[in-house]
Length: 186
Image 1: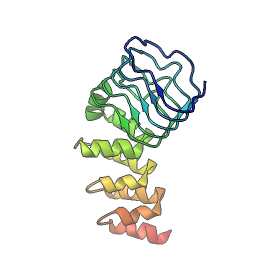
Image 2: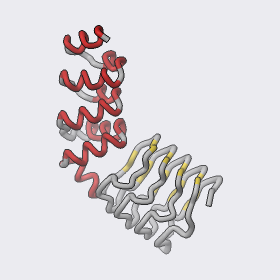
Image 3: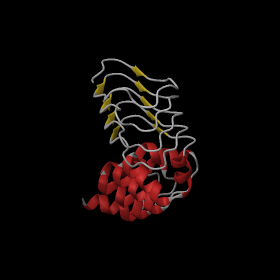
């Protein structure tokens, strides 16, 4: 079922989505309900998609694309498996097991920055979470502009960024001489 407008299902008596939604041309909000799975959620949402403060444990069934932000704060999600493939806004996940994993687990960080490179890498940097060179490499190879968020990018990270987008050299405060030579050869 397509909806031209906003869908709001924010009632504790709701424990599942009542219909299979198609495209929602507006916001979709099922926050503060008792839903446990996303079966029936829209294929796409042009606005924001919010399921905060629910009993959801998995992102399986999430919309394929969301034009705004996605909010799963205060849920039990612990991985990105099944998450939205195309996201224009932020991905909010405060007070979830996923947040704790992102603070400590390199594999989860790599998964995060490969799916949503700018949003997730920015979140890691803003929260002063230590990121390995592997995480940084994934971030800049998927979104070269991410190099702006790295205080002292290594030569390998700089090369990876400029290979993905030669303009990245402009975003590096003090480019490595070998990286500059690499650019000149191209």
